[in-house]
Image (cartoon, rainbow, N blue to C red; front, side, top):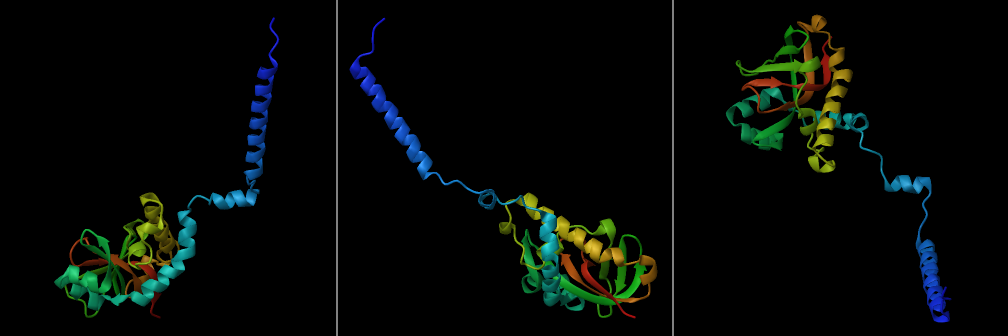
Length: 214
């Protein structure tokens, strides 16, 4: 068996020392993070329910401040939806707009799905309804304030989830407290949001607040 030469041994010792030096340098240059620091670099997964819980009060305030009376909005939309959208609404694309709106009227009909309001001063062919339960659909409450935009979120899934959770909030905090049997004939003031693009002259206002006159 041949004995390794002194030169060969010397080269291996030099190579080993270089590798060891590299490892030591890597260790010295590595920043070790605490569990708290590591968590800060990896934010928790987005939670639409938490977002809605935190932002729903702000949505209510913005819609209340921006709300256009339906007796002003409806004639404007009937005449020129695009012009009315530019003046009173938030552009949601494809020629559609979401509006902050308020209305005061007498409850003409009420069932598990809708409350129909008779609003003085509204064009005779127009209808104003408040959706209840599963009839609360679409995204007007998210869109009408103009403060919640697609660019605020990672993707379409989170953006849609926020709309769903805001609807859940208004269902639990507003519409669930409206008893269709007891409100008929009473005067209600509703503040909320409506989106264009549905049946003409039909204004379905998703409510963020409803006041019943004594």
